[in-house]
Amino acid sequence: MKKSFIKKRFHKLLLEKEENRVVSNEEVYTVAILISGELAKWIQIQDEAERILDLGNMRTYRYRPFSTNQVRSYKFFTEKDFNWKGEPKKGPFKSFIDEPFDLLIGYFNKNNLYLENAVLRSNAKFKVGFAEVNQRLYDLEIAEYPTKVESFLSELKKYLIILQKLKN
Image 1 (cartoon, rainbow, N blue to C red):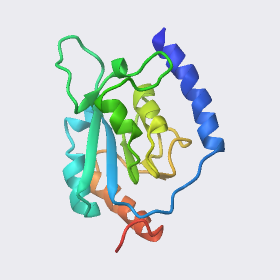
Image 2: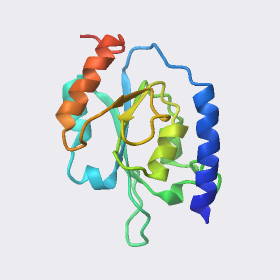
Image 3: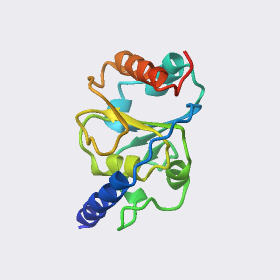
């Protein structure tokens, strides 16, 4: 039931944000990465992103479905980190969402209400993600397989340079 309330609020907020979208022209210094726990098991996205984009100020948050058996961690968020309106609850995850990162990378290629909601609610100035997910979430979409991290990040770097958001 909570999921249906969040989904309804998500679609309403998505329309509002899409109408009022302003794309930042600022250079990228800080980077946030939202990744599914499933992909995070196989991919070291933050290390690769630091190496390829040549930036050091990165923070990563992973989504994993809630389980009473798992210990809470500041590295993961679950559906329990959202209230009935789909807003992030107080704590480290809310701080992550509220922080005005220069770039947010949504590193997931399957629709996931909680990851998409986190991207939508993020205060990041420029958002990038996979083309297959939700084109209304991102300022730039890249068509690539998530297992090809280096290719995705190289393509991202190329576009950030073209957009003058990253120095060559």
